[in-house]
Length: 187
Image (cartoon, rainbow, N blue to C red; front, side):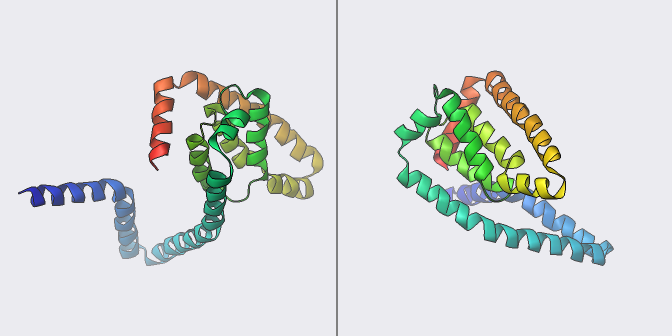
């Protein structure tokens, strides 16, 4: 009897965890049936994205491992935790700006920062900077769109990132932030 309950629970957990993936596979199958060429294109996009992730994620995981081992929690709390002030904000911008890789690679880094008790607003700043103020993107914009455009966009993005980070920290309840940190600690 317990085996049947465990099997059902395991199946339920599996379906809950992979529901989006399974629905996507079903939709892709339907697309192949009705529009084979579109199904091939969709599959090509998925394979390309998967290959890109395989190239980006391993170096990010190495960085994460180094962050966890080399930088003690106390140092991160002092540099970027509660009470770190402008120093924490500048470091969050620096980490996000010099980062390489797409935005999805920033989330594992954010989890490590949560495990090291980095202030919530600094994590939001890191994510915002990673997505909007990366150095390679800035250099590309300077050459392709002009120095003036790149600096103007940067001058708009930095205050917006700060406003979003401080608003999120003010509007999200402390117990919800703690729940996010607890979930990150379990990962």
